[in-house]
Amino acid sequence: MLRVEVSKQLGEFSLAAAFTSEGRVTGLFGASGAGKTSLINMIAGLLRPDRGVIAVDGETLDDTAADVHVPPHRRRVGYVFQDARLFPHLDVRQNLDYGRRMNRLPDDSAQRARVTDLLDIGNLLDRRPGILSGGERQRVALGRALLSKPRLLLLDEPLGSLDEGRKVEILPYLVRLRDEANVPMVYVSHDAAEMRQVATQIVMLRNGRVTALGGVKVLTGG
Amino acid sequence: MSSISPAEWTAILLSLRVAVIATLVATPFGVALAWLLARRNFWGKSVLDALVHLPLVLPPVVTGYLLLLTLGRRGLVGGWLADYLGIVFAFRWTGAALACGVMAFPLLVRPIRLSIEAIDRRLEQAASTLGAPPWQVFATVTLPLALPGILAGMVLGFAKAIGEFGATITFVSNIPGETQTISSAIYSLIQTPDGDAAAMRLVIVSIVIAMGALIASEWFARRATKRLHGG
Image 1 (spheres, rainbow over the protein chains, first blue to last red):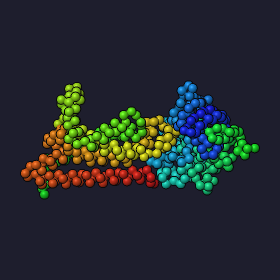
Image 2 (cartoon, one colour; image 1 turned 90 degrees about the horizontal axis):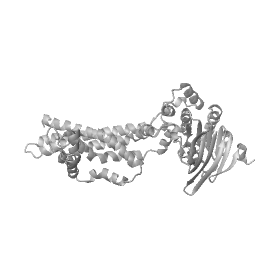
Image 3 (cartoon, each protein chain N blue to C red; image 1 turned 60 degrees about the vertical axis):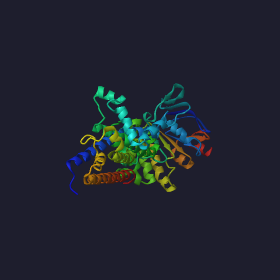
Image 4 (cartoon, rainbow over the protein chains, first blue to last red; image 1 turned 120 degrees about the vertical axis):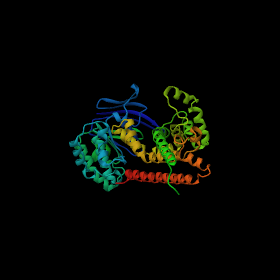
């Protein structure tokens, strides 16, 4: 379960959002500038709220009243960025292995095989990120985040930097991830069609405020 | 032109030793300082920045004299080091290495700082979300991505160290076998009546070492760039 109740002033923009979610995929939906990325950065611990509480599965990650701020590396919250952010000096295999190494998790070849199969990236393992296509990069980024064994996976417009053809190529992987990976996700997008396919619960954001909460049908306002 | 004499070999090997030691010892400090200047804001940062660059703009003889005043046998720090730790820099080859390290430091720090500033910090954020604590982010992301700059800084620093003259001769003098580097040997030779041929041999050696350093740095830089961007 994810509980978010935060406020933050970012220059002229004020963000004040509260929601709880038990869904497998919580969709943060809104136009660009609605505060989606700021909110997800706060859940990741990359941005500190001015006031408020963030808790995952009952564990408090942020509580400004109690001066609690768990740093990003201790949150076990995975993050797939819009621009993949693969490490250019490491090959795909080393990128995938990075989270396991940093968390000192035992080598789990079965899990690695499962994730590389799920994302069809087994044939890319020896390549460097520099020569991958946009879609391949994003799949590797998904695998890298999953293999760090997060308890929550954040996805910030993971299809945002891809053209239409590529989006159609990646979307099925996201759906498979939702159904098979068993990790709750927060999915950020401004695309209603994409949301309908991936999300199970919607948090609608506008100008830094939550305007609607509920199932995917809130997307159509019905 | 006859071959290199034992005395010239001594100067050449001493120069190499002084420059290598100066570069290797200065590099960790250079990386730490470059990181500090690139990434942190603190009180007195511009003063520290100016201080690092001072040896680049001061007359070398001034830097050498300041070293002698502070680290000489009767200097404030030098006296203490000699009395309590038995470390002496003045008129020793270690002093030559220290003088060369100080003179090379600004040239070492600059490319490292630039390469750290050029690193996409979002990669470091990604590393932290994958569970890397700050020192691991530095060791596994920042440092390898800064490697071309670190190598460039080391080559520049080495080149400066091996050619250093003014500060070295002021601080540790020109003692054959102890502090006489290629530069100070050439200086002595061109002041002696029959030294021209020997001086010329050392000049050629200097050129060969400098060319070698440049070619090596080119090669390292190309390899590092390929590692970052290619297959």
